[in-house]
Structure formats: structure tokens, C-alpha cells
Length: 239
Image (cartoon, rainbow, N blue to C red; front, side):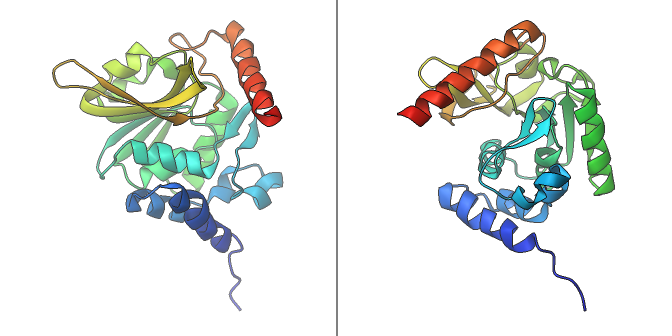
């Protein structure tokens, strides 16, 4: 008798209750997340929580974002298929796998070697051959494959790194969390204008780990950024 995959039902509930119910409508995004086995990207001891409505720890002080955030950020990129995409912050490789179901190719830069190796192995094992994982400073982008149709960063910076903007095609979209005076962190989308004038809009308040690098937070300031996040979360819980 053929065994039933125990993760199929939780994955479908994630699509309905965590994504569609909160406004993620792009069928390309919903279909991509329906086909990616999130349980394969989380630590073995946390697989029962793979489809929980929350981020999960990956080690090295990093997390895999909650499913809704992955869906919302992917939708904000406005992918239609066939794009060249740059991801900053590979983490587990889950978001890169989701992107690869829509985009032609995904280049993903990870600062931490242990996470880069782990994600590369997972993606290779699962057959995601259109994803390339690069170890390096993601705030500087990845010039060899530029320009990009879309760029997404999965960590919060003090602003949008100039190198990332420069590696966008005219009309390209960049989505990332940045420091915000009113809500702490905001997810923003930048559309690079053909005339050199960019359009930037705030999408929603978010909470991400700091983006460390030459055009992000300095390593020595990262703990301050983490403290700010913790203080805001504690204040919200107490309100």
C-alpha cells in the first residue's frame, strides 16, 4: 500500500489559511509554494512545525521566514516567468526554491558558509538546478549575473544598498525590509525608473534579522540592530 505524504494536508492549509486568507492572490506564487516541500528545508527536529505560521530557527542566528512573508515578498516582485532573479540571504534555500518555480534562474548570495553549503546541498538533492548559491557579501549583489529583473533581500538594512539598485534593469523590482522611523522595519518595493527616477513604496511593517555587509549593517553594529528588534517585539507583547 502506498504511503501518504503527511505534509500534503498541512501545506494546503498553509496556502488557504496563511496566504490566500491574508491577501496573497498571485496564482503563480500560490502554485509555487504548493509544490515546494518546506519540510525539507527546516532542521529535522522542527519538521513537524514546517507549516506553522511563524519563522523557525536555522542556527547561526538565522531563521526561515514564516510562509506568509515568503509569499508576500515573492508576490511583491511581480514575477511573470522567465526572469533573472537575485536573492540576498539564502538561509535554508526555501525562498530560492519558491522563486525558481516562477523565474528562469535564481542567483542567491549567502554570507554564512555553513548555511550556503547546507542550502546548496538541499537544493541540489531536490533537483533545483536553476538555483545558484554563492558565498559572499550580499549587500554588494552579484555582478557576474547582473542586470536582474528582480532582487529580493531577506534581511533588514539601514537603507537600500546602492549596489543592489545599480544591478537592477530599468523597470526591475527590488523588495527588501529597511529601517523605518515609524514602525521599526518596513518591507519596501523599489521600481527602477527608465528615466533614472525610482519609485519606492512601503508595503507593510515586518521583523527581520539585520543585513550585514559593506552596504548594510557593520558586523559590530548587528547586535544593536537585534536588540532594537527584541525591544520592539517585547513592547508589542506588553501593549
